[in-house]
Image 1: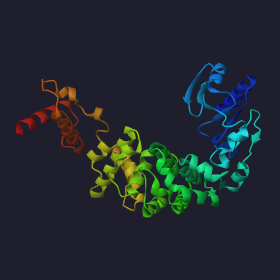
Image 2: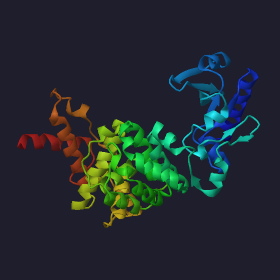
Image 3: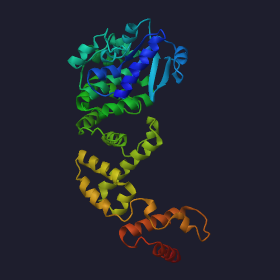
Length: 378
């Protein structure tokens, strides 16, 4: 972060040497004032995208509507956006919250026309002209609760009223944008208080693909805090369980295919564990990571659960931990001229079960012989 910050200040100096204004803005400045690390450093400038292209050799226009380009500088990537309005003050006063309406010059002078520093000290989420700010991009209403969850800040009463009156407008927002904000909200350390504020606004009833009842929202609020390293898949699985769902249309939430598969897998094994303990085969199929997530979920939802240490001990005792550990492969089974088909997967799974249960040793010759004998008896 330190190197990226220094490079951002250096980038601003380069822009200024070419006769333009430039500033670090938004969340990066907020986090700097709070002595927190920031994932991204955004910059605004009086230069237009084509002018930036003449200043820097490596730029890529990311957003034409907002005149945003990506600038690569000494291995770091920065989003650089043309100022909205005639001045930096105009730009800052168009932002969602006062705590995000602070700018920093190249010599680290703070520009704060909206009083964001005072709100940071007070732990308050406030907006200049909240009616305009929240309705020009309705996602900002959900972002308010996301920041409340991440920062533990209280929401200004006027802002809360504006959200309550305009909550239905968030239905206009693309589901993928809502999904990203909702995940950040759920992972925030002050989630319980933020969800209580959200319930007062009624905004949770209007979230595309993610709408929850008051009871489901309360169940979410009661979950233990997620560790910082908690995976996206674990958080989403907990959310769907709070909604009482074990089979969900994850495609409607614009999640990646890999994430959707991982969530479905956890939901599936959560259901399996309601009926039985971990067998060697099911633990092998699930993976240690998934099994640990399932046991955490069982703990959170009031079920008996295995500890990480117990799962690790069972895992360490498995003869197989991945498919490549099996002494035979699909290639071996095709050696005698049989054509590929469903039988191939079935026989490999049968061999895995037999080895993991101890009925067969993990020996190439003995597994092949057992499969041949099995075919003859079928």
